[in-house]
Length: 414
Ligand code: HAM
Image (cartoon, rainbow, N blue to C red):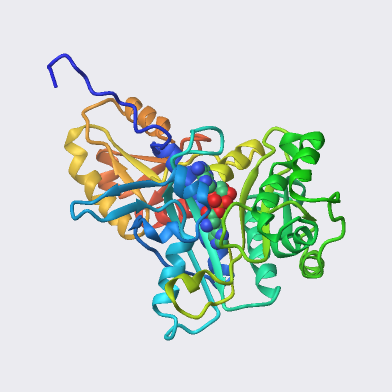
């Protein structure tokens, strides 16, 4: 590189940097997800972002593998993928310990994944997903639990039932319904693909293409299959009133075997899919072990963030630092550091001034960084061991003994 050539400060296309304020939002999203998953009895696991590429080639939808996967050859000529999703990894973990694990398993993970997509609203090349999966329940109780968890998370973000809609279908029921009408059962994948784009291509084009697959006409089912009705009824008794039957919903992955669901934003400003999942009872078979019935979902951070923004649910930024200690002049640096260390043992997060600047400038600095409290250390404070703790947002001041500071701050920030 020549001397004049400067590096760009742009990151890689389609991935994000998180400056502290954006990181705080990200942490908020993860904290809500994690807390809800744990409240429902889910325990955390993690896997590597690197996986053998074959893991995805057997069962993930074709589009992901063909067009969206980041693959490379490592130095030993092995084909490696950056994970585009987590489901094959969790299946690998469960299959590897199929005999030792005691079912049902409730597992969750919050992990980043990579898809080579055209970056646009709601779609980036790196995103995070909460994955929650329940292994070992063949009946609709599993779907009910996962959808209750999904709904619980949305409400924990501050959403109401009116803000989002849970759409649900049974992919098997749709396939059976279609197969009886096709010229040849082998045309099923084509028929599913055609249905998937029905709204996009319009009724005339749909009719024309449908005729290449079938001799008769096809009516959209209006009554949900029995298992779907059951799930919807039970969810209603659990106060999820925003569940609707979506007869065309199939979702993109080949591994789903039954009920599938997808959650949508109801706002006209952000009419998008937020996250989805479904039942995949046979994925473990690709590892040559006996399968385990499983239901799960993946909830992405990008779409959730857009949802929270649309509905005004992003919390105001507050610094993770509780207190900034100002110094009257540099001769008080040591006293300030000692005070900071004592307060840190009492779980107060503290940053200390290190510059020879006017107290006014130090306070302005704390304010700019959204640190809620300041103390100024000078002669009197060192002598009396009492401090004026000032809340910057209100200007309110309390003169306190050192031992009373942690509680004062905790009460105010709780
Ligand atoms: P998916 O629908 O491909 O399903 O992804 C789940 C969610 O991840 C999406 O609804 C969206 O929120 C987010 N997401 C996916 N791709 C992107 C992207 N390029 N940019 C931003 N967000 C994205 C799965 O991945 C399944 N493995 C979920 C699952 C878990 N099924 C059962 N268990």
